[in-house]
Image 1 (cartoon, rainbow, N blue to C red):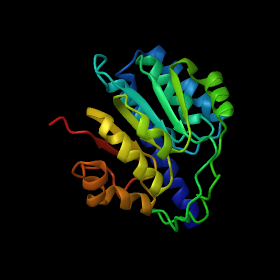
Image 2: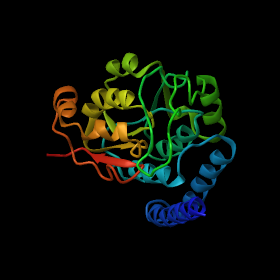
Image 3: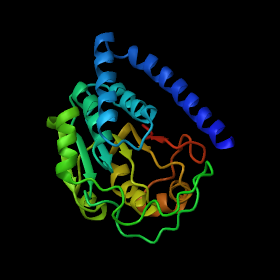
Length: 249
């Protein structure tokens, strides 16, 4: 009964959040465009495995739409799985005439020894993140994006993050991390955060995993490896989706 009640509360919370986000979206784009966009997002969810909440996607999509058109910067996604989120983000990138750069091994998660136990919400995440899990091949992801998204705005960077990200130099307006591991989160922050423009944003979908939270909380990591003071992080230790805004000062 308790699990059923929690599931009901989660669904209700998601519906309320979606309602708020759709209202905000309606204030940003014409009604016909909004209906078409939401319809296409739902089509992705029907046909492609999407281990995310729709509110996560809309929250980040609204951030993309909020970037001033004259402001430089691409959109970055780290971790694409089967391409569901990629297809959805590509719709927002197309609307704003921005490039979407997707980093992924396209071989699943790397081998690791991270000992994940429970999420901050109490459910078990043991054995979720073994090497090879959450694998979508490059061809599979590109196919899904070509069917349901906007492939022409996408650039795919295949390989392990530690091999590909150090060579990346484009300015980033908004970044979205769905990488599961603490080690991968460190690599992304180390190489992507310095490229985020002032006023730009970085989201992580992994804010409910204690080992990932520890990375974001680690002031020594921010100072010594990222090269800046630890920024304010919205929702850290409280929400699944966490957000950092790059200071303009």
